[in-house]
Image (cartoon, rainbow, N blue to C red):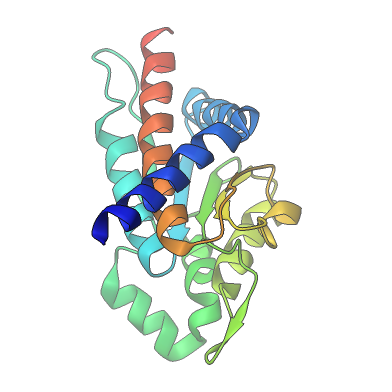
Length: 198
């Protein structure tokens, strides 16, 4: 019984690998590399499982791109300061939790990468999904910084706000979230190789 589930799940991952827009992956790699070249900061944001991906991606970009003798990357996950996140949610509302932090930390030329299974589009019992992501990404866009995204399904609202968005072309949350982690490892490794080559 479970073998059928295993085959279906892994078959979905194979299909994603075949159908993924690799040019978009390359655009995100080049965009993050440009932030490093220009000594700018990349901010990462996400909700739920995507929050853990934001944290993991920030860890890896900070640690795994270290090249002796080269300037280090500066990457901040805005989901990680739990007291600050909860204070902002309490006082200013969940929709402002990322944009309010960017008012503290953003400097001209910094960039942001939002992570969302539905790309900021959808609605459930809590209302419209991921407006805090869109508001944070719009803040960076309005201030002239590059905006990147990881999405799934049809890409959602990320497609209209991002300079480059990698859409995992699949319609289940587990596949999209799992592949976002694969993407962040791929991109981290590629950026590290580019830094080594400078």
